[in-house]
Length: 97
Length: 529
Image (cartoon, rainbow over all chains, first blue to last red; front, side, top):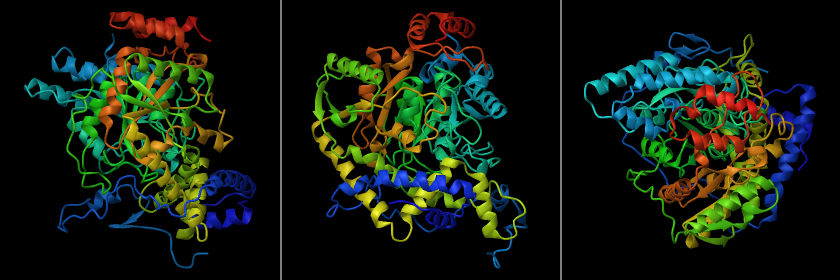
């Protein structure tokens, strides 16, 4: 599948990335080459093969729901780029775009 | 022999017998880093003061008569994608610059509990995405065997640190070969354990179904020693497998007589450098001479492994790296009017080119309309690749192959062509897809005297067999004793080539000063190739 500049724009928006205009053609070309390469998998008939999501068969690991100590708020906030009291502070969320 | 040249088990023994103090050992190692790291650039952070404080505490412990622990006083380096409480952890990314974790990764806790002294954090390809360490957001690490070449990646800093005696042992992480390939390219031992054997708690996630932490060491015994310390169930990692603890040292028997070792024909096809082919061929002959039975096997879906990997890994990465949004930690782009702009700007400025490329690729293959064609398809092929191994292991105790198709390449050689770089992982990605253990050990020298690695792959949880074959091979050869000879720090020139280095290592082995700093440097000057 050939990846177009419009595809790059759409995927970049989904991934919250921005590329300069002069980078987009290069990104489209590199992604196209990689996607073309991985399309090699279409040579294989996988109609009756089940997908493998995990390397080892483990499912639904549960533990008791009991109160235990967790990360101290001060520790959790220590790396915050910006904070207000015990909260992470961010630029406004509504009115974006 | 200098203290920093010892293996972990040798150093621990000296400390246990009180011949060497922990602070003395750690100081020797820190001095070594000060001497050569300007040239090698293996470390992102050297935790000098913390290491010395912990060393003094260990000495006090021993002075009180407490018994030496399994890694007592052993200076260890940690890849910079594992959290260390109070010590900056960056993943070699600008987006995490300045991040100081409030907790330790489980492996870090276990190492320290076993007496190891963490001396620093090593350089890597940003978020472990790469095969040369050139994708570090800070600087490239140089291969100690030739400072004009890459150390491999993504755990290039850890492998270079061990190869240049800047760490006695190190941890790396391996998602598609990132422990084994740099170990091969730097002439040291690198082990990727079975998926789930070592806790990933505190390891910054790249591709969660493939990531596994493993030791990079000077010999196989050290690999077994470190694995025994870091392996084990951890309730904080839901993919960690509950199993009985195992003493991997006990299984190190130098005997492969009657063992069936499979040679997968798909791993010996085109694209392998002649020097690698020759070295690995000679290694197979050695194993056969030692009494192993070599058997031709086929892993018919091998040619699809790299394509499968480059769908699965970027898809998982695109999801995992969504957390870098400038809100809770790490870099935040300044002066943005709203949160979406802030997140987009933060990620665009904070991530490097390869990380963005993989996020884009993974987001694309997971996006509406493409999920089934790419991701689901890849998971099905993953099943086929795993079945190939199951079938091969019905007939064989383990499999052998080259670790990497070439020796270490020169800086810049593959940076403009992502696919060419991805091909470095062609022999290693399958073990991650199938979740099986695999080790790379030094098996000779190829093009321009650069080290070549032999990969040994085993059944799930059968690290014991993999390590036994590796150990037996190591006992019958002395490639692991060869050391690179670094030229003057900062010179930026080539290190001494393989043949001369092998000679130096052979004469230096056990003979006191012959392998030491000044003499090695002098010896390095004359054989500049």
